[in-house]
Image: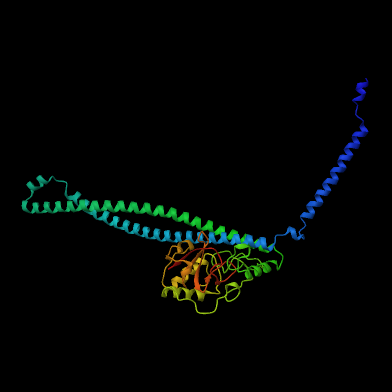
Length: 390
């Protein structure tokens, strides 16, 4: 009995323990909620992204967008080339089919004539003939016709085999063309996504903070945080959705040092002599394009991306160079920076994803990024991959 009484729990003490635990839990929850609320306070400057961190992210997005743009250009160039090839093959197939049809008709007419007159044995026809000499002449002619018919039949068979091969080639090219078209659409979406992300990041900053960072980066020579080509894009005031190829930019108009000011100002004094007449003409075309807007996927005459500008400039000199910066890096003779001459192509980054045209005196002309315009900038604005003399 005594041991049983010792195992009985006091109800009053249990309720006290529960109340104490509940009070402690309430206090702890309130403290936690207060901490979360304080940390999530939007007016807290520490909780907002800084212009510097956004700028670094923008730099990365621009580099990614430019790489995607060059892949887009390459895929579109390949699709255009395949489309021309398919057109030529299909034209050959149509002509070949017409030739086969004509040969079939000629052989059919000859075979029909032989069928109508060739039912009698040749020996019997000779015996029954009233003029054996005339019959023999006709027989010799018939033998020549038969030999010619056999030769025409071989030609027809060869034409049919060629036609089948060309049809198979056209079908394979059409498959590749469709793959290239899908690649164009995929790279286009990649560019649009990165530019839209950059726009949202800039819009998340308080008014004026982005412009302050841009001006500071520009005064630093366009390489704030160690990786910026030719300054940064400006404020994205107002909604913009024109990320399509051919739009003047992917961003609203904002701060842009532009030609003749900031770190990209053209220096005084005459530049060195271009390496050739075509280089001089290309450089002149690039100078004439200074001030025109950047537009990804465009190669002039009123808007450009980086490789579009250089391709267009050399086209004005009557020289056809490839569409992408990677291909342009291989389009001529490599030269060291110390021997660079006006008109040479300066290719940047280890993946050759940006290209400019050397203007002399340590300056290049290039189409920098969406929201900016074609302008002069220092040749060392990015790590140089190679210099090509076209």
